[in-house]
Length: 390
Image 1 (cartoon, one colour):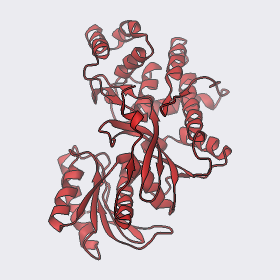
Image 2: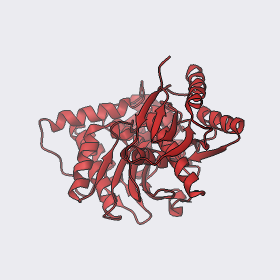
Image 3: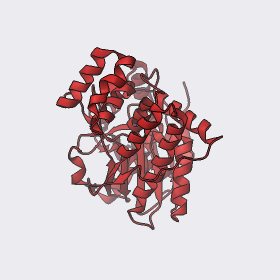
Image 4: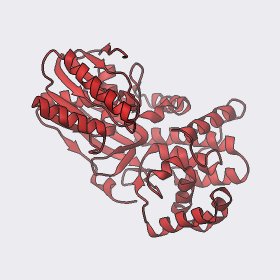
């Protein structure tokens, strides 16, 4: 059995034990105690029974390491995650509080813990999906986070997901969604029938027209997927992040031997806090039609980095910026975004010793639970305008 791992935390206050059970993907649990975090192994995705059993065993091992009964057991907001069920059952057995922590808040909190940060920060949390405090699918979030409070300042323009989770596995569905949002639904059949057949293309077109089984998601991962789909790099994904990996590879190869493409006018900051990248998608269709997939992939990365920095610039100029969530595995995006933010005079913090993705999420959950326990009350202030459909 893989051993538990102890990691000291910089500038850490000495906390009584807090247990956190992590998320669904790449699950890992942890015990925050004193000035250190004790990590379980990474169990993997909780859709597998063996990984669920491994989490349960790890929770008991972490409890055995606790110097006192945990003050609280933290978990994701999603009620159907096995990690949530384990947290609730463990808290009930121990007679302590169970605390749900919003997924993207936890991503930013993990960075605060890793770097020993105090006071308010701005956080860009970019990943595939996490349940928002409004019950919607989030994943491209600009947050203000303090020690015992947080606020959603903005989000990426949400994309409809025809077929729900199927759209995350099949980028062609997101291509149809992009055409629908651009007012070009009449192109769905011509563009997609050669790839997926007449029946599938027409069915998805009707779903989008009638808004049937097309939940909205602000997830940044879906924007990578739709870009890869438009450029012909991915129709169906054989494994997680296949489309995003192909998109980054194409972009890196292009930028290694060609000048950076112009990005002016390819995004819009809306008054409701949304970052609108639809002009970028329109340009990607043009490049795809010209057979310029490499240029399109480069354009996507450079535009996204500049747009995110522009989004941040609209808010407090003296706050550090934390980059959390699985999309920051993408080195090209992270490098260019960090350059833009540093040029603004910002302090920028990325994951170094803790995973930027869900494998590091438990630390953020535990950190929030410890902080809220110290403050004796949570404070959550979602931006109401963002709960409406775009």
